[in-house]
Length: 443
Image (cartoon, rainbow, N blue to C red):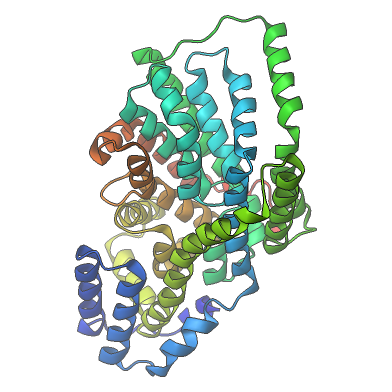
């Protein structure tokens, strides 16, 4: 495991580190693909520092992604794609709308809820933003929401894609730090739901202030009837998240097995309902492969870079430099959050995890932070970056769907960012938020 390489003496940091890092910044600013920029940086650092043999690169590229846990990544991506193609995702929307139709901002709240439901299956925020955005943005505008705000609402709700388990991000950080993905999934449930609740509350507050959407005055009997009808017409769609959560939380299924089971169930339901045909499989596989083809090369090239930085003693040097400024644990936690938020604004979650987790983990250990709490805090803080410019991925997804300006969407997303940051602070300073569902050994 990569984390095992960090227990060594720190070495003086010079241009063998700063030079390749400047190269990385230059390549990213020139719009070079992230995986290529990371790969070039790893090669440059190995050549300049000579701390490890260059042959390490080829070995690490394959060994780094040769893990059973990573098999869950394409499986959850494929499940999300099948969910959309079979129309099962619309069943989630029907239930969410029936549940919230009576309240002011009801369809906006339903949009956030369906983002959470989709997140409990796909594990990908971009997939959730695209799928939910296609179903809801036009209807949100018809309901009275300004288009930029409707886009911001979907983008914020889709952030739960990596925050509510199952999550690709937790699989990756578990691989990097040698922590069970199933344990991280259990720890992430309450924080993920708190983020979802914060987005719901934000929408309700904003809607009450601007009166974008009113509620329908209906009796409890009518509400219950509508909800019952929606559940009766789409209960089978909830089999997928129920099986995933039951399998992982009961310990009967690993994340990979849960992902495989979810794929089988969604395909089976698609055939039963007649919404999926054999002719759909090539396009479906191609779509999922494209998404997976973005994630895995980043992981593959990030690992040798992280190994080289570990050999140079960067994590230990970072801890020494930071703790020489202050030893106050509260300030150090706040500094870590600031670093993660800034990193999330300019780079995707996967490279941030593989590069920053080994650097920040020693600092978390130094102040006595629980490793599970650290992982949840890190992923949640990085999740905020999906709706913050300049490279907020969800902003680009919904902008591509609607043609709306990214800056206009980002401006309307500010209230969501604020409330989400409050949850990040809660996770960082209250350990029980992320360890409540875990056995005592993890607390």
